[in-house]
Image (cartoon, rainbow, N blue to C red; front, side, top):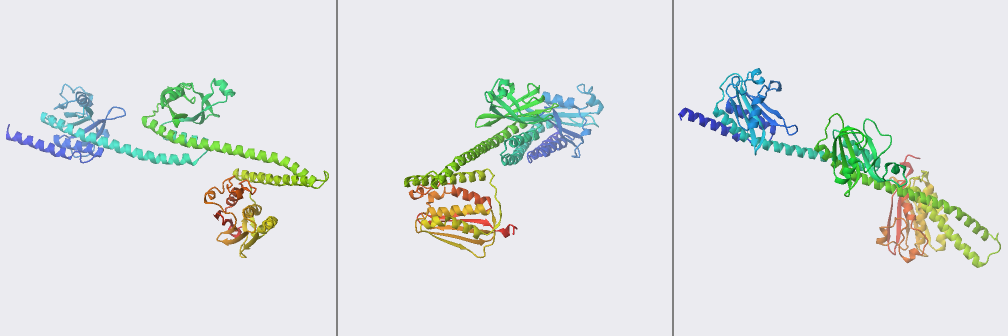
Length: 589
């Protein structure tokens, strides 16, 4: 071997080492592809170079880098190459060399070779771990014999190294893109969760879920429904021949359904989902085969699962040869999981709302039905006490007094139940206007004076002179003060003391009712405002009551923009304090 040939060989190896050492310094796929192509042109002295990779979606070769000798990108309309050469290289897995393609029997009759006047051509496949990623192609259209056998060997050697760098960059890019998509999806699902959980209306939750599913896939429309069991006497059950159905409650498409559509569990798609417990993708679906009656190019049906049980179905359709890919399906499945939670919450809310309405209706009915006989009982008792039914013995008078006291208790209970019912249902009206708190406190004190005197208790009223008018419903505030003073009277022993105070502070008037009575244990303090709660203390149980008063007090105070607090010590008494907005702060006088 001549010295000149040895020097040339050494120069080639040095050049190969130099360009190879640059590979892997970046994981940006675009940079790697251009770097590979520029290095190949540098090694071979080619006029132009092209790098093709297989597309994962359609399996076709696509040009991903096109460079010239000056390391400039070749525009797409100037990519005039021989795909026959490339195809032979990737299929055979070997490098291809043509010193003059115009006269090469393998390629001279190819339109591209003749039309583009191609001469010197080399092509090598890009292979890694037994898989062909694509190919690299270089040419020189001006001269023949530019490339030799050694050039092809150099190209093949470098292509093998380049394939590893390209695969690493592709994997990194795919991982990076997948991570970016996941982060974007998590951000999107955060918005979806906020919208879904903001509403407790079932139809709105279903509508939002379907809207998101359609908006973020290629779907043209769809529907969402829940499984239910019809009443055996339902006409629809008789018509369908089954009680178990899928009721489609929201529909989006070219034609909206005027009413919900019932789909029997025997429907082929529904039956398949119930059996396999997974999403079902169908193509070329007729109206009869479709879940919601919409013919479609592609139909995706995704189950909504709650605690391992399929409770509903999201169905999407595409038209005009539009596909739904795996990512779309995975997205809708994750959306269905989130929708399941929101649907469960909405259904629980509906059940609670229905129970509260039933309770409200029951209380209203009972209160009405009890008032009528109680009025009659009270009327006849008063007539008998007045002697209109003849003279009464002392024992008879005692019996009538027992009846009268229990009528008062029943009347108080009915009134309390009605108040709670009206507050909870939002039907209690408050006639809020400015009034003098002193007058209300004085009226309540007068009404309770006899009871306080009977127990030999002292009542002190301390209202600051500077207290301005307050803004609330005077009658309801009188009811609040009366309830608290009545409790103080009942749970304070004979000879005890009750103090009522009122003073302005900032935007509110503060009212406190203090006693030195039984007090409340720390355990009972946690349940104090709970409906029907009464302490187990014998002294408390001896006093009449239903455990509704403080619950009503708190609701009435809070309904008028006030707050109520208390301090108590067992055996040392209690102090209840509530606030009322000042009228001048409300701009009402």
